[in-house]
Image (cartoon, rainbow, N blue to C red; front, side, top):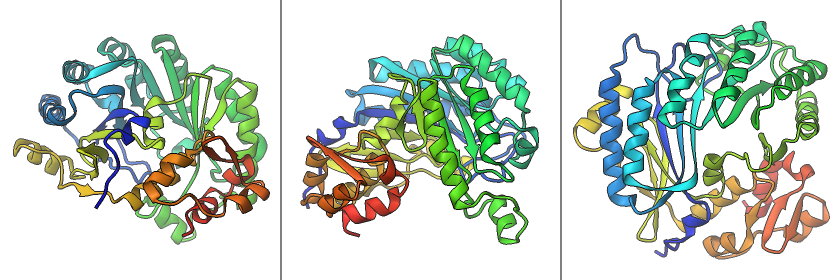
Length: 387
């Protein structure tokens, strides 16, 4: 079986994801791998992360690293000294890009915001704040531990300490209307973040919200038309503040796009280290999917036994083509026709029809969704792939 060329992943680059699995509390909408523990041995976790970095570097140590991302969970519960030790070990193992992006996700509670200086000194140069809402009632509904005032104060503090600042907001929440969303979005943008991620509230299986929804106890959710209006309004408001929609849910000033997420969306290689972390790794021309135990305790024990990674799975070329289309079509820049065709063995389907209907545009080697196409992106991908 023929696999992707060794150099194929380089079009997307190489990144490293560190998963910190702990939170103070579990948010009812969240389906991420997060856990609440009364006690965390920071030294034990430091040793485990360093051991996994040593193991991963044995396979990839010659590569140029574009990005490091501390995700979770709540990485701002990690001791800054642990963050520093991890970054020091990374610098020992890999060649670092001149513009290396080091992001840490943070919750904007007062205690965690006070730790920002420690993370900056450790080498973090970008923080991603989980604001989620600027309405105290909605924050309580979302299970957040901070107030709207604390969120804005943390954003101001982050901008004074870090070179780059991003924040997350959730829209299409209970009882939210269009004017309220516009006011909320402008309140954040006036504070000058260079990147913002805006997600429509979705009901994920296995969450507390899913159980409430199934029981008819999650009233006031906007209908599809109102949610679509909120999405369309968002791009216009962000543009007023100099942020362009470079991805379906992400807006940034020119040059401030998330380098880490671009590695994902452009289908580069990335290492996933920590409980529940996934990765994509191309070795000797074969592309693998990597995964780890979701349980923090099982992952730690696996690392003690020598390897915190589960058996790898080979990704066939046809599956790579599907993955590349699904990820890259989220981007305003779209996908490379030549790269997709090389992976798939044939070009996309229905290109003429979708171009004539105004759903896609094709310029040189790039195929991308138009604004109209992005509203129906899932259907668009199905038609292009012939599924």
